[in-house]
Length: 249
Ligand SMILES: C[S@@+](CC[C@H](N)C(=O)[O-])C[C@H]1O[C@@H](n2cnc3c(N)ncnc32)[C@H](O)[C@@H]1O
Image 1 (cartoon, rainbow, N blue to C red):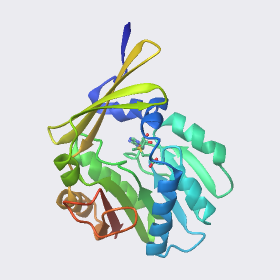
Image 2 (image 1 turned 30 degrees about the vertical axis):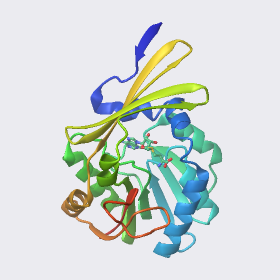
Image 3 (image 1 turned 180 degrees about the vertical axis):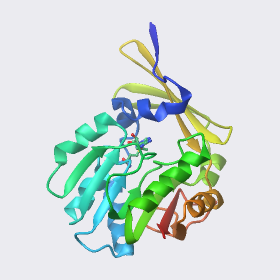
Image 4 (image 1 turned 120 degrees about the vertical axis):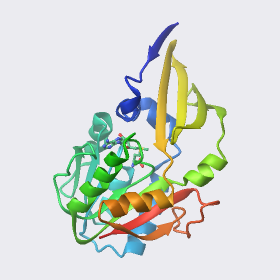
């Protein structure tokens, strides 16, 4: 059996893993329905007027973008993954566009809202890069614009960490191990397809509310509200699954 190690370097695991079809197989339960419930609740809470422009930053295959566009918003979905943008672009129209974009580089547009959804933050080893992403968000928001970051609740995630599990999806047996090391929650994902062994990593920084506050304020923005799930219940650090931040100037 041949062994293929897909991770070219620890630094840019996110360039490789999210660009594979296997990421989408493993996370297939994070589906359109989940995106639609969250986006309906969010735009309702924000009172975002129809026709407003939204940047879906790290949009993946565009599950949130496509639904937001159907609600009457002008959407740009941006992601580093060429394959995901190619897939999302099949749904393009006059008010729904997709671009390949690294969130660490300035965004080529001004917009009323910027959404960063489903743990699309906290990948970079250097905190300065996290601050740079927030600065890019700040610089691309129109006056009175709003940003939203939807992150995992690291407190609960670490408390309930399942160190070892095997998941069977689409005839692929994913063996997953998790650990907390050097300020990151590290998920190792191993599987074999057609006799080829694959090994990928996800590394997500242990950013709790206090650390987010520091990063966001350093970049010149403020957290104005927090929620703990996609139905926008209050954030509770021990029990919430998500940490959803509403951010303004
Ligand atoms: C966990 S997925 C979430 C995707 C999408 N928001 C969703 O909910 O389906 C994280 C996304 O971040 C993208 N990403 C990772 N690093 C990035 C970067 N430096 N700049 C832009 N996008 C990035 C990945 O390609 C991936 O699509």
